[in-house]
Image 1 (cartoon, rainbow, N blue to C red):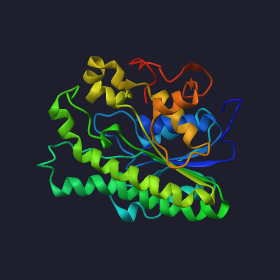
Image 2: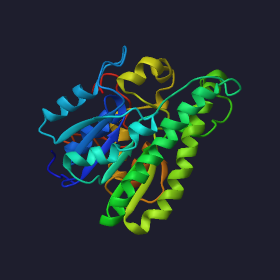
Image 3: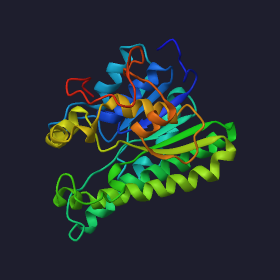
Length: 288
């Protein structure tokens, strides 16, 4: 825990937290004093990807953080149907919900099959909405809550000429459409519940967050276009701002938010100032 401990006394749930962005956000929230429940779809190995839910929980517990894990396959409405209740059983009512879990399916928009579109919308739109609706009654009753939806720059069609070629842009259109829907829902929900003391926002990286996982499938793009990549600490610092301050309906990228507010970027344990919004991606940074 840092000396600031700006989240002391708060309880958070972070989905998709066994690795990557979700694990990094969970790390930062615990460093600021929150008790955090990490959620992922399963506890076993993720193929050739590093990180399991058990490992993520254990590594954070070693720092002295109050952490717990809950499994839920967010494709299934029955598995996610009581996730907020299960998460609250560990440390109390959820104050902070970070909807980070996402599913990607690549394919030309003229050919993405219905089964893939259904899964994309279940995980990337319906699950965040369901979890928000589960968490809202308690948040509204206590007049305290933050909901952060992790979005994507792919929610918007890039301008031509496409920097990495048309195929890469077209292949991500269905995924981007699911995130665009999430952004629109975020904005509407935010303005409905702000008067109840609940703050709902959407955050996206400029393009690529250089986690270990992202480096494996987009490292070549980041190498060709360094300005399209950002260190995970940049996104995490922006996430911390949006789950601790009183922002309403922001649909924003991480670098833009940090630059606007002149915020410094800290290490994931919160102890070291690394820079500001212009902090470059470091391929040798923390493994998350």
